[in-house]
Image 1 (cartoon, rainbow, N blue to C red):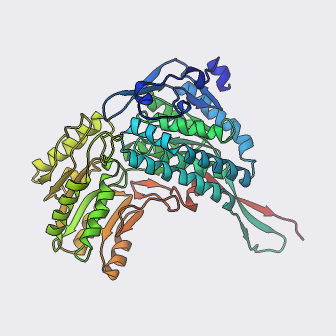
Image 2 (spheres, helix red, strand yellow):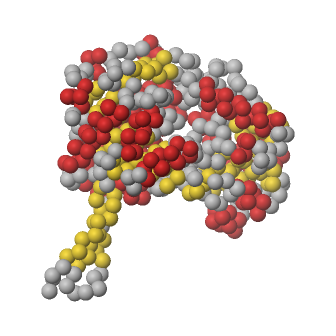
Image 3 (cartoon, helix red, strand yellow):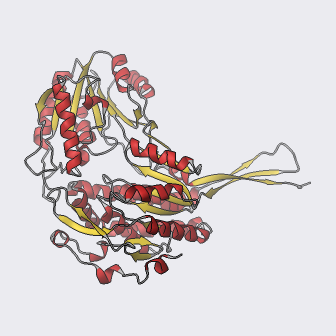
Length: 513
């Protein structure tokens, strides 16, 4: 059943769109970016129930707008549309797919200011960071527009003269994508760019906190000429999300599931995908160590930590979470860090000039961060600065530094996802590595040292999929992003990002004699 027949008369959004005061007041030039409906089979369609759910700005609680609260019926329609589109999309040439991805990239770049402002309104992140994310996200479309033409096969030397043996790569099929609120643009382009380059089609379920960015990307994909059904977006409230997610994993028409989010949800999806033995890509939570050795440049280490911790108010999976500082530079580092936090962090509404730290995504996340700090302090940690809710609003938390933290305290055991820096002093390299690796997470890690031998020893020994060495900003479209242990499966970005969307097909040509 097609989306139009399922939902009856489809309301084209440019006819039904209503801008809220929040959107009108923040310089959005293109009303076409603001969609209430989902995008299925090349059509903008409402929820079958007619229901909407509100999206609020975490900086002030103001309703940004409302979007369709879709469920299993609409999700099945999206999967059907993607499955139908795959029958022709996978037969397109790499050159054709490359050209369409490039056009999508061009349109994102053309409209990046509107995309950034829309992102600030629904996610709360500072405008300067939102602009950075749009550039980062579009880089994946550019990268995969180029990599589409580099999906190579192999010719194997046959053991007998009567046969020739060849490997080719084929797209897996329909890819379900469940994306998070903290990077509502880039986590879609990073997945969809690779999928489309490989010849797959996709169904995207964005986080309920940030659906507008996903719908805006769908708008630009449509304008780029990407055929109906190749990209689909299903929006759902928190209440409908479990049922939508289950169908995106269990449908026999879905070949693979790709998720960025918490480890707990990732494990649930992994289990659901096991029933169909589906391809899966998981980029899950982290608990990144940030180690400062005696040989480090303290100035550089402080600068790196400011980036690795306070970007998106600490709400990134690769945020520095456990800061380990060797005793020889501990006091110097702490003093320099405190000065940097005082001078460089400005908390407030992301639309205001000069703001560097926005709100946490919602009140529940604020309460969680507050409780982590309170429990850590109750166990003996000292508050150097911050430590409580910020006066800027109900979802803001003060930039915080804690010292005297030990491995058994909650701030070291859990991913904080907030602007909190817990610091532990250590004596030896062996001690630092033991502490850093004492976690089931293994996404990112960071360390600072000017000792070349130490750099190689520590880089080899840290148990993480990615390591920043004298560097706090490690993400790029060109790199293989992903973790080990309970931090995920597979890699996104780089040439390896296409691997999960293809399978190797072996062709044996016989009877050559």
